[in-house]
Amino acid sequence: MKLAEYNELLNKWFKARNMQSLDPKNQLLKTFEETGELLEAIECLNIDEAADAIGDIYVCLIGLQIQLKQELWINSDYKRSNGLTPLMQQLCSLANQLSRGGTAEIGIILAFGYLEGVASKFNMNIEDCVAGAWDEIKDRKGLVIDGIFVKYNDLSEQDQAVVDMTQESLF
Image (cartoon, rainbow, N blue to C red; front, side, top):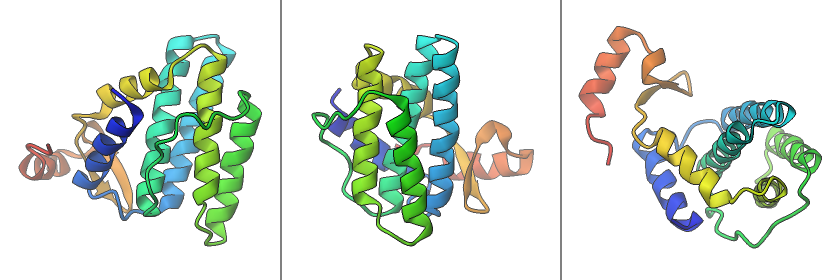
């Protein structure tokens, strides 16, 4: 599948879970969390975990675009530097832009490019990384609590019952 197709699936996934109007700052925090997992995987030379983290970062950035009501990333020819440092710097710049109320559109595009460059550096195909992330989340259920999506297994039994009644078939 091409990135544009995954983007459409992810767009539907975020909206089916009412995550499109959440605070984008929380989504960026999740992106930083996933970036930490990427750094750890690379430090441990665990390519499978690195591929997983790259896919998860991609999903987070798509969610950020959705929450900021931006056009979804489609240009996989926009590879940038293949180092982790530029990716981290760009994510910090995004945090700064969002804290000032900026649109961050160019910053997100650059982050996608840097992310794809990191995948390339480690001989990974970005589509494969996104495919793995999609396979992991496509059936994930949960509930938005205090502006944050909480996975089904992390919910109380009462909240799980609510999810069971409202999210039987999201697609």
